[in-house]
Amino acid sequence: MGKIPPGAAIAAIAAIAVATLGLLLSLGCGDAGAQQVRGQVIEVVARNFTELESLRIRDKAGQEYVFTTEGFVGFTPSHVKEHQLLGQSLLVSYIRRGDTLVAVSLAD
Image (cartoon, rainbow, N blue to C red; front, side):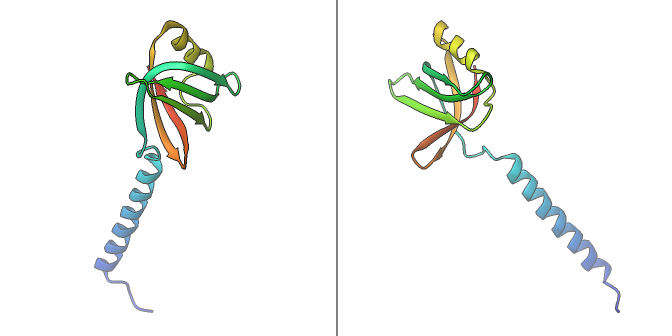
């Protein structure tokens, strides 16, 4: 068996490192395509104590958005309900899955 030239070994290691970094970045930026909307909370439906089943908000222009979730989005249903009762707006980051809007995170 012949030896691998030092330059080829370094190039192979560099290619593996670049591919690994690209994979990690794509996994870490899973919500990179997320859109955002800020609005008043109109309706909150809890899935359980920590997760929202659905959320409906109205933006400044009067357009309503209905979101579903796939787990914890940063706020409990009771916190979101507090926003509704106090008239505080909420920032929703979401992705589209077909005709469904899926909230991925919420912020004050």
